[in-house]
Image 1 (cartoon, helix red, strand yellow):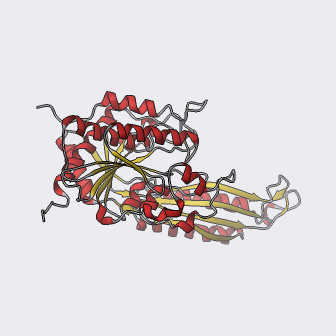
Image 2 (cartoon, rainbow, N blue to C red):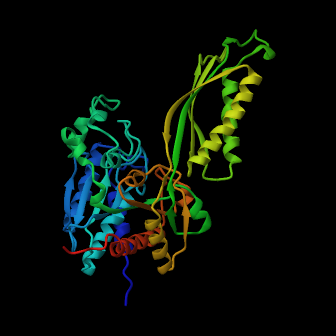
Image 3 (cartoon, rainbow, N blue to C red):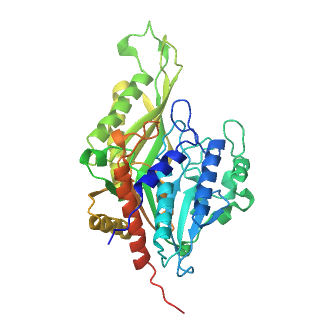
Length: 422
């Protein structure tokens, strides 16, 4: 008997077809939130879903839902999907792969005449990526009830376009926005397939990653205050240089993370400003954003505390002062053991190597975890590249993850919410 499987050739064709929407001159995708290219990608997904006989709707937050009816439509739904928006000059796999695999799974079930117990829902979330409106993971946060109508009021992009106007154009309804929220009792599970965006699976030759937790993100603005002075007449021993103090503090963050016991604890300084930023003046003030990510809150806290020790020594030795302002403290979110275990078991039954790993990036699955059993599968990324035109994953790895998704959905359909008539 032939094993139930996705059609890799058909899926690859769909990847390239959707991947042509929003292509720029550099070969990357400019399909950022609520732009004409992203709206065209949404139309493509809705048309494909309708062709499969799915019930397609767009909710008040402009999320796309496509429902496959079941034997028992009163049961909560098993949801799977991701997003189709990209970063500027991004790639065709990040997010879109999860939506395309959801379409492929629905198509396979149709071809095989399989009726599930639970309704199945494909979702394409709005605005997962950082976007000009400053509201990343917008769609999943809307579904989880983590944003209110007031959070949308007056929000504009850098051209002055109102978020509410963009939302209407995409099919949403800002006046009824909070109705996009789903109730926990409506959902049986959520599963998202995504490219890894790193090299851990690739380096180990493992085709399927099973995500154990969505990374926590801690971010603060650090201001190092020194004394501005003449660059020529101030002796080296008389200087209180804010920029050199800041540089040492940044290197201390690198050292803390390099020596941390968990290699998934990483630190980044990605934004810097220097005052007065003149060639002949010793810097008097430097601002930088310090970010630490980790798979547990304890890992993040340990890195913060070790950096604080280094920072205090730098201040004492250099005579500078440090002020700190918290920008973000997003807790790590554990993925559901039932979903992860189901994926692991199905991978083993299919004969695929798999490995547990933390996400190291934010994903919609983190917000869905507040509503239901939530899980993620990762596909290896070639050279670890993502958010760039060179982003790519091998179709043979994608096929394996797709088959795990297919069989995990069917297994969850059997074991979740055992149906009781009457």
